[in-house]
Length: 436
Image 1 (cartoon, rainbow, N blue to C red):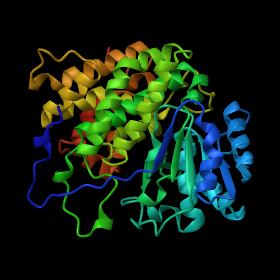
Image 2: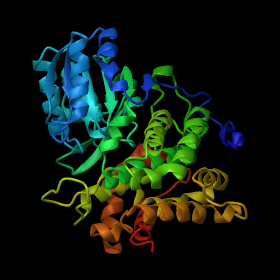
Image 3: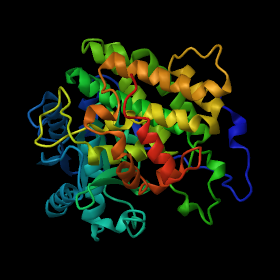
């Protein structure tokens, strides 16, 4: 298992890959260590970021107690926007700059950690907001240098943002998310207390669980790093560098855990074995995609979030407009995507399906896409995920608009193992309308 030939040298292709990682602490109760770990990073006055739904939580109380015990002065920011936008990240940056902080703590899901990463950049290196984003929407300017230390404390089991140098931010004027990527925004420390997931309701566990599933399988089936162009100098190597042996290790184990524990973790909040395992899998998948990048399911998900007409997920606060949580927007496209991409890397797709506990004993190469899609659909049914795009108000007539929106995600689309044009993306959307 591992398809070493997948990384065979190509003419003009990359000959090396780089691994970027923060220090990781994992276990039940380790939120009590956040103060000592922040102090060891030289933080004396910390901006503590969280969202409105956690401001009265036991998790925040435990983090604040640990920081107080360590003698760290804290300023609290509780206005993190779920699915952060350029405007909300700028507000978080203003808070950091005006508060004279020397470090940050994030406590929450991916939205909180991504907000904190963005805030640290714009507080220290002010610029027009699109400056640090890649074309076609941004100027492609690199983050100029290191930011203040960040201790990331996830409370969900899916995003993996605690171990990545990536931040996903919605541009309100374009109504689409884009990725800010830089090794400088990697958290200095990741403190993963799996007990934080005990309070998560089932649909949040399902959505975040499918996000981690998709991170892992996209990494494993991504274009090989050797198929990306060789860089001129080390600093130019991007975070999205393609599948590589490091990411493979973590992606396979993350998929194995999801295949075994996702249904249990969704069904029973008291199943600590399942929820602990999913927390660890989320971090493993973050280690994978933070060093390889995702591809089509994530690239296409932003269009779904943008154009969905109606959906109010159970277990989430109700909104005035349609809201498709990130993990759901990703997985709605995934069966259709992998039916399309499998022909470019059938062995990788079959290995990923096997890790997810699919029966591949009699599967041939030409079956790979269907085997992967079938196993994902089984898990969607078992956990109450919507049945394709139709359940969020989209039809095949929306496919052209969805494809046009998705094509702006150039780097992620380029990380697909199979080359494609806009018409191919449109077809994927058309075939994702309904699955059963």
